[in-house]
Amino acid sequence: MTFGFASSSAASLSTSTSAASASRLLEPAEWAAAGIPLLRNPREVVSGLHARHHPQPSTVVVAVLDPDERLCASASFTRRAAPADGWMFRNALLSQLRRVIPHDLRRRTPVRTAVLLYCREGDARWTEEDGAWMWGLRDACTLHGLRCGAYITLTHEGWQVLGEGRGGRRPSAHSSPEPLVTAEAPPLPPRTGGPVSEVLRRAAAR
Image (tube, rainbow, N blue to C red; front, side, top):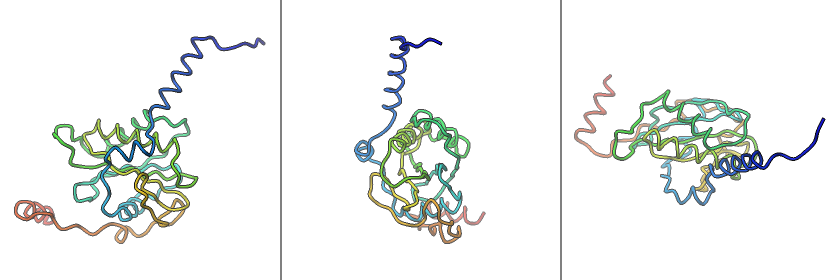
């Protein structure tokens, strides 16, 4: 058996890989400065996703909301046991988005918004893993033609919208889901009349 030091090229590669991984995360100040749109009623969004997906620790829920904050599509998956890397998280989120909803890349400006709910162990304080999920969400939204929305953690303490300071005790990482009919927000009235009302009336008639 021989012992020695890693070659300079191997050490350089390891250092550059670590540096690249470290750069693929967003600090709380960067996230707050990114102009992420605020949720009008975050508890109803969180409760609705919790009721639909029953997340346990290590569960990731990505959801797409329309301009009236109604749920268009959502998907959940289990986070793999691997180092936190925003690039890998981006790919996982993008794969789920492509599976559940068409992209909006042909639009000049995004209309729909993607939000991320991550159920994890630990407390509600920001971690580097959260920063990697934030980076991944922002990049996945860009590649799918969506607005980057809220990043929400679900821990034993409850839920929290990181970067906003809004949160609550229920639901939590270990609480039972509320019935879906009470967890979801009631339909919001259309913002304008005329054609919009007619489209909604036809959709309801179906």
